[in-house]
Length: 240
Image 1 (cartoon, rainbow, N blue to C red):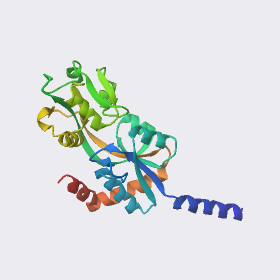
Image 2 (cartoon, helix red, strand yellow; image 1 turned 30 degrees about the horizontal axis):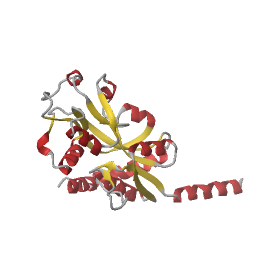
Image 3 (cartoon, one colour; image 1 turned 90 degrees about the vertical axis):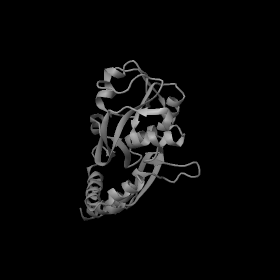
Image 4 (cartoon, rainbow, N blue to C red; image 1 turned 60 degrees about the horizontal axis):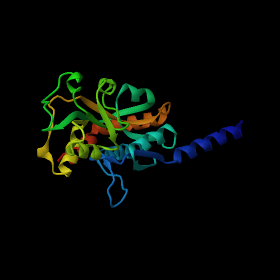
């Protein structure tokens, strides 16, 4: 029995020393992205996650991949944590969600080619083809609504390009992010954001269902940094 206990203690120590493999979306600027020059993770969410993990004092490594691969890696147990997930009921059933890390406004963006000036119910969007990124969750009611959709975009940058090319009527996404890509293409005068947002969506990090210990460690560190104002400092720097 003594040797069994020693073996279990050694195994526990070994697991604790292994770095957390943390992954995020490589095409979610300005929140998480890589550049053509190298694959160094950059972005607001990368800095927020990095700060919390350092506060938690756990070894870790952050890498960014295409979003569909990020979800597969977490589902298969190839990584310990992933970000950034919308706080939808579907995601809550799939994962241990911790957060929110931050919140963002999900909006509809269109061009002068469409007549719509705003919307009150989702039925108001039914005459239009709405572009969204394949595999993204937006808001439960919208996700289930019977609307004409184009889900061929692999990332938000491609989605914006499709709107500007006239391939779709309306796109949906994070307000800050869509404007980031529109400015990147110097196309601010070609688009408009519908005044009514779809939702103010909190964004979470995710652990495998049942991985409550890692979730607890991250959550406690997140609370400490939020109370100390450190997360606000990081966000203000990115919003300048």
